[in-house]
Length: 52
Image (cartoon, rainbow, N blue to C red; front, side, top):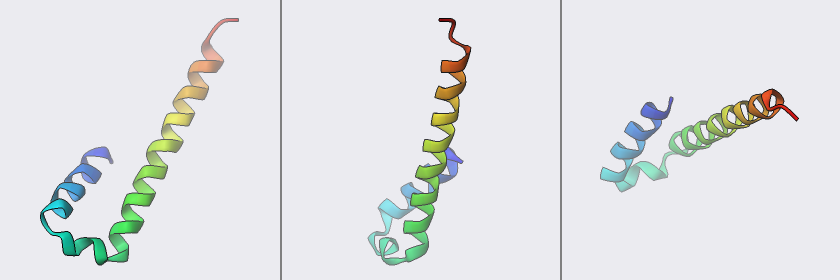
C-alpha cells in the first residue's frame, strides 16, 4: 500500500492538475487512514506484549 501511495504521489508531483481530481484526495486520505490504523494496531499489540 505504501509503495502504491508513493508511486501515485510521485506521478502527481509531476502533474499539478491531478490535484483537482477528487479521487486523488480520496486516495491520499484513505491511504493515510490505513497507515494510521495499522500503526495504532501495531502499537497496541506492542503495549499488550510489554511486561509490567
